[in-house]
Image (cartoon, rainbow, N blue to C red; front, side, top):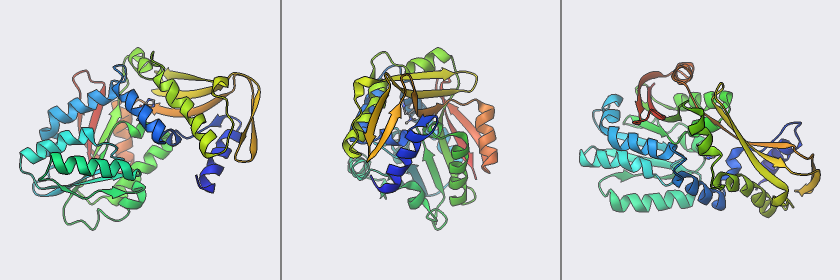
Length: 311
Ligand code: AVI
């Protein structure tokens, strides 16, 4: 980890209310645990979004209004499994599309490109490795064809509200007039359904959180004792926020990157926000960021939306 990253982590762990950004979940081990999360029956988000993209691909593409060739630009593509549904549809329709998966992980982008090249030989692939702000910077404006941006998986829900808006504004700034954004967002629903998806009975989300400590031990020369921490999470149906935490089980001092961090017994470290939206909240964000909301595409249980916004 570079010195800015180390300082960011130290700052969070020295704050009066300690926190660690959820972006640090995703080392190789954390990404593998996240795969296990997505396979849990309680974690309904993945299947709900897959269902929407598989069953409503035609309507989604029609609503963009794109008639000719276009770019499908996926931000944080991961393994691209859900996008396969859209591309498969486009391929069958003989639509001319260039798929631009962008991900920070070279392994993810390479794997996905190899997989799609084999399964969708007619689709043009133009994968990009890097931070999607840097990769996106200026690129869509100079494209000859319109672009449909994909920001799937409820990733928007992991940003605190101000940052979520900044990100949407940044997408907007980089898009051409008439370009479209398909945003995957988890909806407010029976709070028990949401609670079970995060406070899961298998302990997988607990491992996902505790893996942060393993990562810091390995990469920041820290000496966290995992048994001295536990996981807690809470869904507040009034705010729509799932908040996840690590709890210190004793008064303890931990070494990390040549600093000493003190924890009180029962002190919390906030590790993640997973925001669940109402339609007015989503529509408010769209308008504030400069978009027109075209349509919400829902799964059969109305748990999740892929919302199409136009610049
Ligand atoms: C990646 N992100 C949208 C997931 C979420 O639902 O907030 C990460 C996750 N955290 C716990 N379970 C899944």
